[in-house]
Image 1 (cartoon, rainbow, N blue to C red):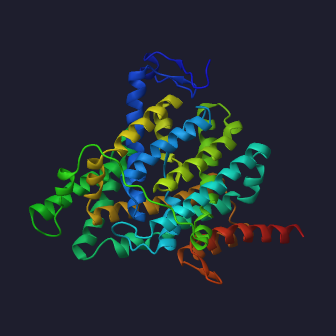
Image 2: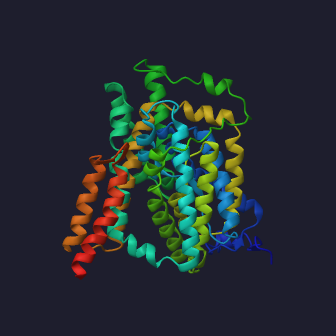
Image 3: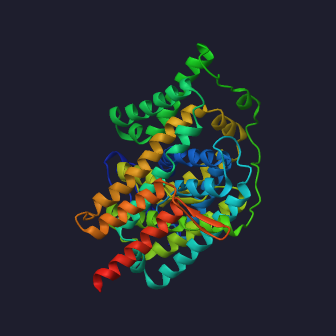
Length: 430
């Protein structure tokens, strides 16, 4: 068998609810349908993250497809994962570029240089893991640290939609309507509809917004002129990276989050499939790191393995890597459609703000879930102090300056959590 050869299972396996392993696949027609499902699952987050950073969402979708193909090749088609835009970069990119929250990011080059540097460090981590394993990562970043760092990513971003994405009272009400739509989809639907809560909530809220503005004249109307004028096919606009020491030092620490995410996702797939994928951990880090560098080099966001797509695998019990090959190719096609990009840009800003409130809140809660899932003991004073200080450093945008370089918010919280845990652990041992 070749490196990327899958054993085919009959379509009856799908109807019967059988498990399709990473090295197996359904007939290509059904594999294609599963690929479409994964594109839909990644779509909301992959598009939202670049919009919040002032990047081109169309280019981000294209780079997600390229990144997934790179990951597929480097892991030898053994690890089922989709790589989409990482939310871990949002706070540090905004800090590094001074982005105000609307329109294109004028200093995108600074962000791209930092993203490439982060991807390079991530690749080096992967090479180290390939050589000596992951034990050192789990010791350096225990659950109390990773949970706190993930939580502050969401909390640090909270002010963006509330202060910058609603210009008046009507738009604030539209934000509230949007997150209510998302919440209703999340609670009162089931199956794939529930997993698409962000996308469906955004569509419903956008339609209601159009009724209130275009129909009733209550606010700024939705303008579809750009969508109508845009061609179906075309090349995306690329951007040139700018390598600034300040921006790179601010953005590179995100590698800690990417490592924690990827590590957790691979262990989750291992648990679901019953097949130990730890041997591919180093290659997965290298694949994600190289994909992030390639994305940054062209003007795209940093990428990461997506929990949304792992959720789809859990629901369908289809873990075939062939599905992700199809999904990546579909994302490439969407990335070359300016009309698709114009449609994304036509989404009303208050609606994006309402969706952002949900997404950032979910990120914060994901940090708490890490604590719960790993049974972090908060009666232990060390854990309590590390988590408490980290949350306030990140949420309050605590900043430390080293000459002309300023490390703030997520950076101080990330390094602070790691160093504080190390210091308190040594003190206890002594």
